[in-house]
Amino acid sequence: MLKVHINKQLFHYDLEVDFTATSEIIVLFGPSGSGKTTILNSIAGLCQPDSGEISLNDQLFYGDKNGSLPTRERNIGYLFQDYALFPHMTVEKNIRYGVKKKGTELNLILEKLLDVLGIRHLLSKYPHQVSGGEKQRVALARALATEPSILLLDEPLSALDSETRTECQNELIRLHELWKIPFIIVTHDMDEAKKLGDRILFLEKGTIIKTTACNR
Ligand SMILES: Nc1ncnc2c1ncn2[C@@H]1O[C@H](COP(=O)(O)OP(=O)(O)OP(=O)(O)O)[C@@H](O)[C@H]1O
Image (cartoon, rainbow, N blue to C red; front, side):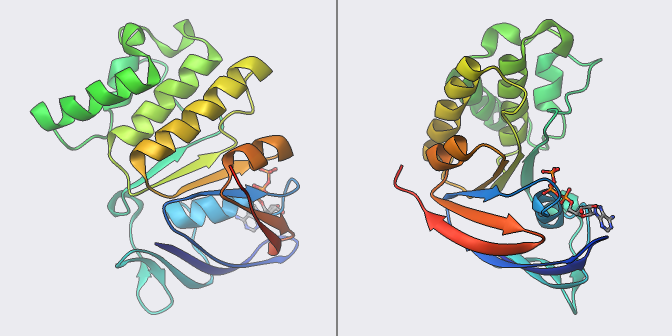
C-alpha cells in the first residue's frame, strides 16, 4: 500500500494531503496549480516535502526523522506529460534505458510489453518517426520495463486526439489489470477521470476537498 501524508509550503498556499492507494487507479483531479504534479514529484523523490511521511509497503520513501530515499531506490515508473523520450535513441534503446536486469529475465518482460502494447514494429525507429499515440505506448513500455512497484502518470493522454486517447485509456485499464500495482494519474478531463479511476481525489489549492469512488 502507498501512504502519502505530506505538507509543503508552495508559493501561494500550503499543500497538505493525506491519502493511501492499494493496487488501484487513483486519479488526481483539480485546476491548474492545485498541486497535482508536486504530489507526484514528492512520491518520486524529485521534490521534498517540508514534513510528513511517504511509504510504499514496508519501504519508507520520506520521513521527518529519516530524510528522503533517493529516487533510484524507490522503484517507481514515471510517465511525464511530454513522454521525455531521448530523441537520439531508437525506441528499443529508449525502452531498455535504465533497466538494471539483463538477459532472459529482461527479455521476457520486454516481450510481454511489446505484445501488450503492440509496438514491436517500432523498435528500430526514432521518436520523431512515430506518432503521438505510439510515443505514449513506448513511454509506457519504458516506465514498466523496470517492473516498478507503482506507476505515476502526469497527464499521460493530453497530447492525443480523441480517438487515440480513447484507445490509450482502454490500454491503461488493461495494463493496470495485468500489472496490479497502484497507478496515480493526473488528468484535467472529468470523463477520463471517471473512466480510469477507482477513486478520484479532487484537489483545490493543495487540499483534497472531495474523494469519489467510481464503478468502472
Ligand atoms: N519549487 C517551488 N516552490 C514553491 N512553490 C512552487 C514550486 N514549484 C511550483 N510551485 C507552486 O506550486 C503550485 C502547484 O504546482 P503544481 O505544478 O504541483 O500544480 P498542478 O496542479 O500540477 O498544475 P498543472 O495542472 O498546471 O500542471 C503552483 O502554485 C506553483 O506556483
